[in-house]
Amino acid sequence: MNPYKQYDSGDMFNVLLNYHKQVSEVASKRMEIDRTRFSKIEKIIVTGLGGSAISGDIVYTLFQNQLSMPFFVNRNYNLPNFANDKTLVIACSYSGNTEETLSSLNDALNRKCEVITISSGGKLKEIANENNLLHFEVTSGYHPRCAIGLMLTTLIKFLEESGFVFFENGFYENVISLLLEKSKEYSSEKSDPYEFALKLIGKFPVIHSTELLQSINVRFRSQLAENSKVLSYSGIIPELNHNEIIAWEKYDEKFFPAVLIQIIDQDDHPRNKLRFDITKEILSEVKVEILRLQSNQPKFYLRIFDLLYFVDWVSFFLAVTRKVDPTPIKNINALKEALSKIN
Figure 1: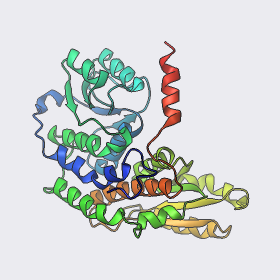
Figure 2: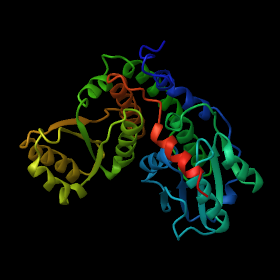
Figure 3: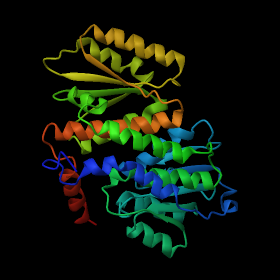
Figure 4: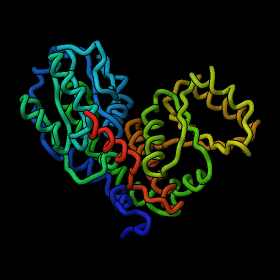
């Protein structure tokens, strides 16, 4: 039962509650992959937008310490100039109809890249079939930002089965167990995500992290925009210590009621951990409210999934507690409609 049905037309509450099932669904499927077809690959590009592209960001977060080649997430109509016949391009579009992704896919084909595709169908699947590309189809029926469990797990499984990344036995079981446990905890009005969301009401969230957790930073900002209908800003330590920190000198809550969110991980560089503390101390002098977000899970990959799930719940609660429906994306649809009328 959805206690927020009055404000939740797309039943996002239950989609979030059952997020673990998306991971389980993909993890249980077999992937028959001939690794020899990727033996010449020297770089990887994941191309997509929005909820489909974030999977590439999170994969890089999870496996950056073991990827033996450049890994790039592309959010544009064209691929970067370095793409060639030794580049693996993974075109991700949940709907299969994202125009930028379709354009970059055609660019990849023209450049003779090795290409695979991930979608729930659409034109992406059609192009894949026409060109005999390896295509992975995920279950349809979700909003793209709500299908991250399907898209992310498919991408992870492909990269593992192809030999680009590796992980410990029990990886999927541990992730599913974590998400199942947290689904009961995070869905409550007594939960940390709910309390966290209440602290953001009426505030402009400024999200700080290091590059290690940049994908969570980006996901949080995106979900606040799409689900909560709230603008926010992202900053990266240590870069922001060389510019943004100066702007806080004249902070005045009367004119700009901000809340600073520091997303921290125990694997952050020791000097960056120190920077978080010093930045917090400096900004406390101008009386900006500062919240810290950190997972206490024992393994890095579990902390990433925990944070990913946490911020999604925060964005949901920030919407419904303000009587805002998290599902509709009026401006995105208006933009797509306007573009569709122009060749």
